[in-house]
Length: 78
Image 1: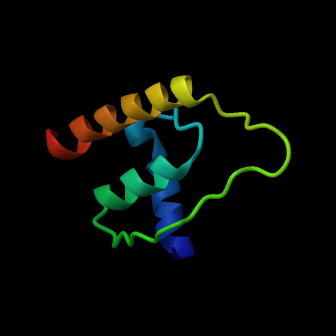
Image 2 (image 1 turned 90 degrees about the vertical axis):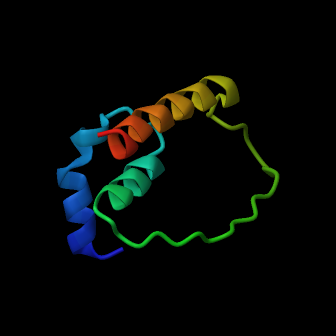
């Protein structure tokens, strides 16, 4: 992603709300809004070897679903 595109996405971040705790949906939804090319890159996650995760799977998942439906309304039904 170029600095110009990131600046465009950052300047329009409020369009989808400011409740993305992870930051990746800001990039994905913003890129979709401005018709930027989105490339799917497979990532293979491995089990943690130390420490514990700070992310709650259930409440974090609910937040991500809320964000998805909010963006769906903004992108598809606007």
